[in-house]
Image 1 (cartoon, rainbow, N blue to C red):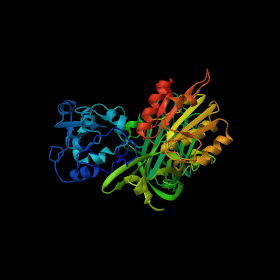
Image 2: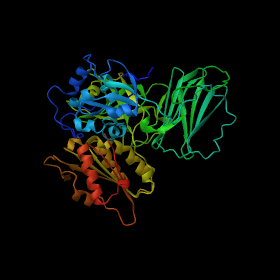
Image 3: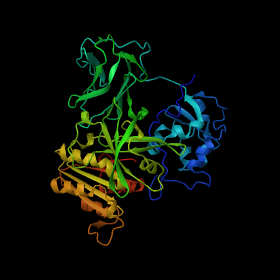
Image 4: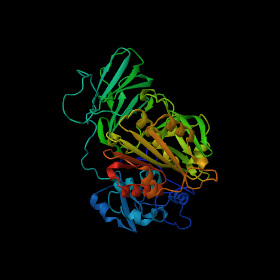
Length: 514
């Protein structure tokens, strides 16, 4: 029998966007009347056979997939699952040409380039044909599924294999799992831990790779977890308290994906149920949501990465990415092991389906929160002297923790410059905190640019253009620069193009996708 995920299975990445007016998005086509997102949801739930297989699920070979490659018979594969997207052609916001690029082939990479945030598993559930025929797995759980016996030693392995390893040890009252990452770990941490009903799931994000430990523990433990990280040597220790003073003969039973080391994008997001503990106003349309994670759950969200929030809104399962920020820009940073809450900056759009739903939540309501996602790496910043951050609106969110890192922990970065684009003065997020930081720290500079200024505005006006970049992106000879960009897609695309024309190479740029 095929093991096909249900709708509750976490989607490999994120959101179905319903863009409110005024938001820029990827290129869209004008859809025919009656072909909106909600129309598709109603159509997909009408009971019609959208696969042509009368409810059967099949294994699909490469040869079979290639046969379904035209407008009237279009199959595509995303992360090992094959969908008949023919019925969806007229409902796709990007038009049929975009779907046809993946006709009859594995469309995972094409999908990730533009749509990684789309919750396709829910959107295309009724179009599911089946799973691609299995070839060779790079890493599989132990076939014997034998319990994991006590180790002879807790010292790191002596081999030169770059693959992470783990070990464990115990005392009368506690059990300790140790992961040797075999590389330095960023100061923001890299570990997500979930302990629920005796099952331990640990995921360590190591650059573009994900290392996972997944076990049903051998005996009962208390609900709380402690994570201690030795950043410079790449050691992660997870500590659990036993419920009884028993000696464990093994650590537990390996579960699916245990001890696997794969590309992060191949790992489906894992969700937990957080609780909204406060909502704080930032400006007239933006709030900070403070979300407490359940006992037994720890999230180290690396700088530049985001989490997904998932909810069922008007019968549609929607997912949106949000980048955690610190409680404030000027507060003292917390050590990763002390982080128990997430702070999410949310802009509320009057006609935004998901943001309006969030705005209607009350303290005590639950939120489905994923682990960290994103491809940003701090490695290119190791020898950078001048860091340029260009943000529009809520594109500020990934910049906030990056600003703190650059000004407090990266002494080699001599200057960090933020160009912050907004429509009106009242739209500027954390204006007082940004300007206070600039006044207190000579290594940080902020410039506000408004496209619709009031008569009393004395700062810069307009939009991003080549002349503005020439004025601010001045790197002394012998120095090295790097630029990060975040905002609506039209802003990001234009800014990246202008930066390349200004002389920055692709390896000196990072565009946050949102």
